[in-house]
Amino acid sequence: MSVTQYLTATSIDGYIADPDNSLDWLFRIEQGEGAKERWDDFMGQVGSMVMGATTYEWCLAHDDLLAHPEKWHEYYADRPCWVFSHRELPAIPGVDLRFVQGDVAPVHEQLVVAAGGRNVWLVGGGELVGSFHDAGLLDELRVQVAPVTLGAGAPLLPRRIDGLRLTDMHRNGQFAELTYVVTRS
Image 1: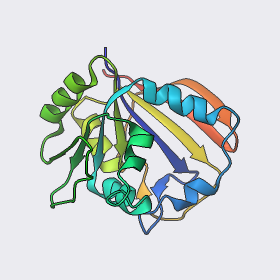
Image 2: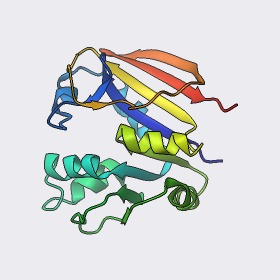
Image 3: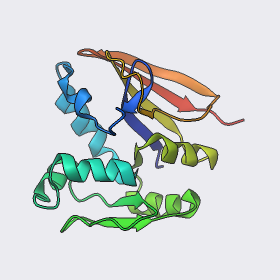
Image 4: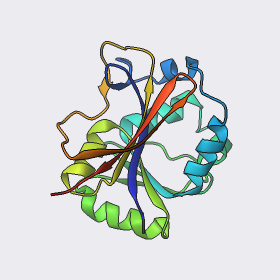
């Protein structure tokens, strides 16, 4: 059965991107031994992905994906990705992208079917993930807390979410990795 999970990194003060919507701060922090193996294990369990327009635009710019689409494939292989946006965005050549808007529930059904029994990864941002939670479709949060404060930016989750149960934690270099299951009443 597919698990719909939000894997992300956050600053200690709860931001996933800085005020310029950049993640560059994140790549300056040391990961621990075995980080690549943990990433490969996580991605091996992912069958489909979804992200918001701001996250997609950052990915496009950060790795110049329109000129170098092979980089997308290096990171995410051939997994289909849905992008929620209210504006027209360029598609990366040779990548299975589906641009959508509106209610997350019917898109979630498509994500689960495409995942083929593997997990659905909510890449970000926080508002989109919050919409999945509001619809009762978020199962797990996997948060890597980085030893930095940003002071402002895009929040981890811009809403109150109760009913989280800590199921795992460990150290990854300078990150504290926390896994929570979303309980429903």
